[in-house]
Image 1 (cartoon, helix red, strand yellow):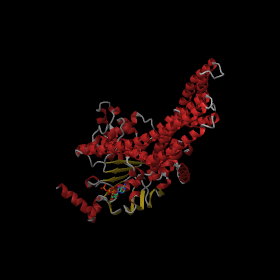
Image 2 (tube, helix red, strand yellow):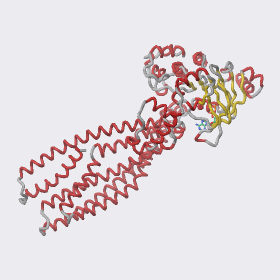
Image 3 (cartoon, protein in one colour):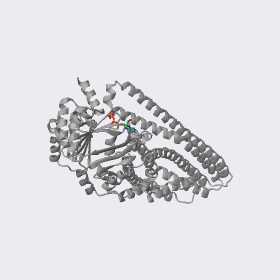
Length: 600
Ligand SMILES: Nc1ncnc2c1ncn2[C@@H]1O[C@H](COP(=O)(O)OP(=O)(O)OP(=O)(O)O)[C@@H](O)[C@H]1O
C-alpha cells in the first residue's frame, strides 16, 4: 500500500514541477532552477523504486492467492457427486482450471500486481482533485470528458460480457476436442476418423477466431471512441485556457500544469477503461467456473473424508470470493455428516467378517431420474465367498457395481455390511475396503511401480511390497523384462502396455490394496486365451477369502462361483449354484444353452 501511495504521489507531483519548470524557463517563476531540477530528479528516482517494491509485493501475494484458489477449485470439483462428471466434458473442466483461471490471474496481475488498474484509479481521483484546485474555470471541461467516458464504459460493459463468455466457451470447446481426439487416438485411427476430427477442430477454431475478432472490434471501437472524447476535451481546453491566458486571468504555469494533468487524467482514464474491459472478461470466466461448481451438489460424505484426510482447516469462503460461494453449505454438510459417522476401525472388522446385503434397492441415474434401473433388487454377497452376477445387457449389473462402490447411493432401500447401513461410513474409508477391477483398467501415466503402489494411500510403499504384489498377480516376469523394469513409464492410460499386462498391473494394485470386498467387472473379457489364463490365475489368488462379486458375460468363467445371481430388469430373477440353476431350467439355463450353441 505504501509503495502504491508512493508511486502514485510521485506521478501526481510530476506535472506540478513541470508546470513550474516551464514558468521558470519563460522567466516568470520564483523558484531557483537548480532546486526545481533536483526535485524532479528525486521524483524520477523515487517513482521507479516505489514501483519495483509494489510490483514485487503484489505479484507474490497474488501468485499465492491463485495457487490456493486453483487448489480449492480442483478439490471442490473432486468432491462433486459422480453425475457432475457425467454432465461436464473433461476439456470443459480442464478449461476452467487452466484458461479461465489463467485469465483471472492475468487480469489481476496486470491491473493490480503490476499496478495498472489500481494506479489508474488513484491517479484519476488524485488528478481530478488537483485540477479543480488549480482552476475552477477549466475543470468543468474535464467534467464533460469524464461524463462521456463513463457513458462509454457503461455501454462497453453491457456489450462485451456475452462476447467474452462465448470466447471463453469456444476456447474450452477447443480444449475438449483436443483432449477427446488424443485421448481416443486408437478409436480415431481405427475408424479413419482423422478427417472428421480435423474438420470438427477447424470449426471450433473458426468459432474461436470469430469471437476473438468480435471481441477485438468491440475493444478497439471503445478505445477509439474514448480517444475521440479525450481529444475533443483537450481541444476545448486549449481554446478556453488559451483565451484565459491571453486575457491574463490564468498564469502560463498553471495552464501548463493543467495540460500536464489532463494528459495524466487521459492516460489514467484509458488505463481504467481497459482495466474495466479486462475485468468484464474475468467476470465472465468467474461466472463459468461458478455455474459449473454450483450445477451439482457436493458429495458430503466424500467431502468430509477428504477434508479429514488432508487435515485442512475449514474452507475459508472469504479467500476465494465468488467462486466458492457454497463454502458455508459445505461446512454445514460436513458437520452434519460427521455426527453420523462410525469409526474406521469398527468398519474394518465388519467388512472382513460380515455379509454384504442389498436390501430392496431401487435406483435411477440422477441424469435420467424417470427411468428405474434397479427396481427392488435384493441380494446377499456372502462373506469370503464368490458371487457371480450374470444377465442380459442393460439389466443393471454394472449399476449394482456402481452402488457397491458408492459412486451413487440407492434412491430407495439400502446396502448393509453385517447389518450396518454403509451410509454411516465415511466414503473414503469405504473406498479402502472395496477393490474394483474392470475390463479396461485405467493406469496413470507414471511408472509401473508407481501404478502398483497406487493401491495404498501411503506414499512410501516399499519396493518389496510392490514386487510381492506383482508376483502374486503374475506380472513380475513381464515387468522385469521391460526396459527400466519397475521404473518403466506406462504412457498415457497405460498405452505402452498390452491389455493383459495392464490388467495384471491393475490386479497387483488390488492385491496390494488388500481390500475385503472385491468386484470384478468383466475383468478378463478383453483378453486372449494366454493372457486370460495368466490373469485368471492372478484373480483366483486375489479372490481367496474375500467377499467377491464377479460380473461376466461368458458364463463358462463363473460356473465355479459359490452362487450365481441372474439379474433381469433391475431385479435378481434367479439365484443358486451353476447346477441348481441349470436344473431350474430358467433364464440362466437358456443363456447357457445359447452360449453353448454359439461355440458349437
Ligand atoms: N451414467 C448413466 N446415466 C444414465 N443412465 C445410465 C448410466 N449408466 C447406465 N445407464 C443405463 O442404466 C441401464 C443399466 O445399465 P448397466 O450398465 O447397469 O447394465 P449392464 O447390465 O451392466 O449392461 P452390460 O452387460 O451391457 O454392461 C441401461 O439402460 C443404461 O442405459
